[in-house]
Picture 1 (cartoon, helix red, strand yellow):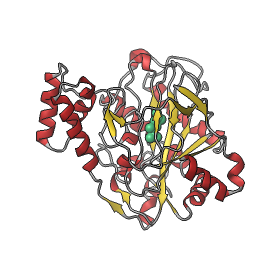
Picture 2 (cartoon, protein in one colour; picture 1 turned 60 degrees about the vertical axis):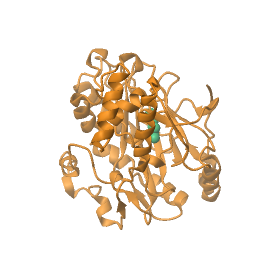
Picture 3 (cartoon, rainbow, N blue to C red; picture 1 turned 90 degrees about the vertical axis):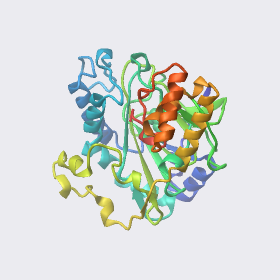
Length: 362
Ligand SMILES: O=C(O)CCC(=O)C(=O)O
């Protein structure tokens, strides 16, 4: 795959109409050094301290942004030991505060042309080296089928550790947002078992520094690439949408998680009195139920491929077996896994099929 550099749009920060036009044309804007390195370092150091405490890192300089990981301690979702550490990392107040940075809010307000709702459920991705057995990354995807809510939603993705040739990163297909929701194909190489049915020969990517941000539309096709280094790749992402448009309740509430917002806030110095705690309760938020139709379609696609003996459906079938809300569909997915010679145990890194953005290396 030919990987070309993102176009630097910093010059357009002085001309917000031109920046908005560029986003509309390219489906993304890249703004190097937009966030203060000091704030990024504070989040990264907090995450790395928890990784160190959990034994995920080999002994070394605590200030090193690329500490080596400890292969002997490698655990993945759905292992509860992974979930416990990731939850502590994700709960860090500094992570949530970073994604509410005033400069970001001003930028998003100008790109969206009005008041912005910051999605409460932020995403922290801690991607372990592939060589230690880490699960696959998100394949090519659009955020909209999982995120739902406003079709004008924008994603901000920002690296907390330097992105190098080996760390892997976010790759983007420019101008891929203009055809609405794309069909999906089954893929054992994508964490959720499916990816957008695209076969690009080139994409945008390459080295990024902490503080750089990528802003993507919710239909812009992108993917995570493998971490072939020996350290963690850590990044954060968050979605922003017009305040007056509906939001999927799964992007607000911690649905499917074994913990509550109250428990998260208990770890913050000011607890639920923190101005960021339940901030959305003071806004006119219109939360709507998640629409499971895209998942049902994917489950049926996986079952049909499984019945036809397609081993390319295995990851999707294991995810369907674990997450389908229809017991008959889940039972058939289990039976098909066995028939294809694989136990229907949860695929490592497996996550709700519909939420590539909450995938669990996240
Ligand atoms: O950071 C990654 O590895 C993938 C990010 C992603 O897929 C997303 O933001 O939707």
